[in-house]
Image (cartoon, rainbow over all chains, first blue to last red):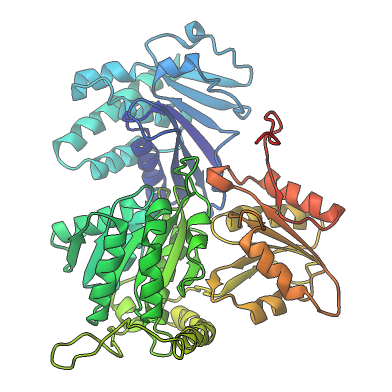
Length: 185
Length: 392
């Protein structure tokens, strides 16, 4: 089983990200489980969303404490949270940031950090920097190989019908491309 | 049948739609809102034909479905926490009037302190109302128990309201893989509602009338007898479920790895999933541990539950609610079954997971450890040690 923990603020679409990842994994023949955990029902409040992916039905419904992968959609949360806490050896942390992983200084000794300028991509393609969820999950797909780009784009198109779906699919592709290029270095 | 990945609330809403209620009335409250939101959307999009009544409170929502049900149509409502507590007065009336209203309770803690997170306190408030109560482990079960709830509630040998309970967020807001049946399968399983009595101007009757002391006792006795009768009817409905849908829906209870188990846990709702993981781990190290997942809490299937637990020497009950000043409701009832029995057993009762505290494998392990040391009674698990809890 692979477990994902997403850090974001309410209103940034992290719960949507979790459900898109789960839907895409399901389309690839996996079992998936995605659920939110937030402190208070307020826009801007920090929240977590969790995803579990497995080849067999998933029983665990408790919060993800030892993730294989971490997604940080809002880099301001790095100041208040140890986002890599409990990260499994070989784990990956994907962060929405224009900085390099080294500059963020997470000091991981058993996992790696991938950064992607998801807010910039969102601003350019979607006209809103806070719609950074779709480029971020694109980067996740590239950095982890858990889900193929095409399946993910299809899942995004299903979630947002019409032109919004197309633009978000482009955002996924850009996030994917940037993370893939960084992987190749 | 279609296997899909959907939100738990959506699964319940679609299950309700497949049962074709004619009137839905509801008032929004977290975390129940998604269910009626989805139903309202289906109606607004023209994909579901029913009268959706927007009301100003949960008391009114329950009153609307009471009245609609009395006219002889199938109805649905749902609520959580404070909303369900506000419905309570009407729910007792619905049961006493023998109206087969089906409602979903998306389980949430009751204030104060204010909490939007899950435990079983809200549905426990109305456990004595004369409502059948089914507790689901996951979205699949929540949807399946909806079909079963209508079928049992509307059976002329029962005629009582039924509540499908699902844990807030961990089921209601979780996306998971669910098998949704075809409409004709549900039609084959659930016949159209045939009211035994209904409000009809051409054949006037009165319902919910005043009962003098020479009749009230009998009216309550008859509800009690209907509750008892419903146990066999739930079993039949469960057997038929497997025949029609091709997969099981246990109905009363599920026994998990209980063969030769000397310790058996008893739990309801989503924590049964976590408890199953704990059972698997302990079984791997050779421990004879099992789980009894209780699905039907009202009626309390005492005889069958006793039979199932009888071979075990240690029983560990996990309650996600507390009768403040006494103990956990499930723990109290399970323990009472063993009183006066020839073979003494250790029955430990624990309270955990209130107000959304995460029920982890290690918390359940802690319960097992404590129960092994000696019988525990109403012990709270996972209490914080950094606070002075003895202060008033």
